[in-house]
Structures are given as C-alpha cells and as structure tokens.
Image (tube, rainbow, N blue to C red):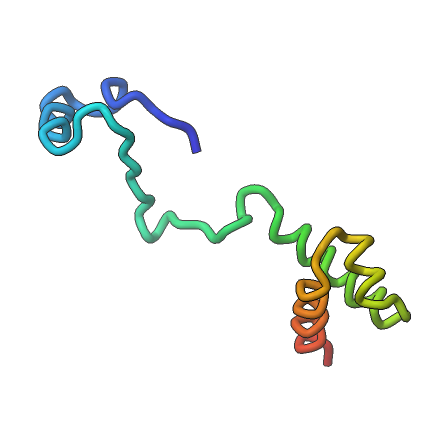
Length: 92
C-alpha cells in the first residue's frame, strides 16, 4: 500500500471537511468489501507457505525429527508440530 496526497485525489471542500475531524494525520480508508483480497494474494506468500509446509510434512514422514525440522526451517518445535497436524488433516 502506498500513500497518496489527499489534495491530488479529493476535492478541496472534502479535504476541509475531513480536516474538521482530523487535521494533519494519517487516515486509512478501507477497501470496499467486493474489492478485498485475502492475506498473501498479492505477493504469493500464501502459496510459498503451502509448498514449505508440504515439504515439512513430507520430510517428517520420511523420518526427520521435529527438532531437525525446527532447525532446518528456523521455526519453533511447536510451529512444526502445528504444521504437521494441519497437513495430516489434508492427507487422505
């Protein structure tokens, strides 16, 4: 998200009205519900984490210990256990 100058977008009378409520601060204007995206949709991070989590699960099934996986992926053992549990629920 990048910041835009209000004077470049909004009419002067609207800026004056907003200034009555908030003078010289930052104002976040949320997206319309129909335009909202889920976390990670723009960056691909969600897909990268799915791949990583599947790798963790496969390595665990191949014999890697939770401690080893924790060291390889720089995650806590609790996080590794959670990932394995979640992946196991997807596994038929």
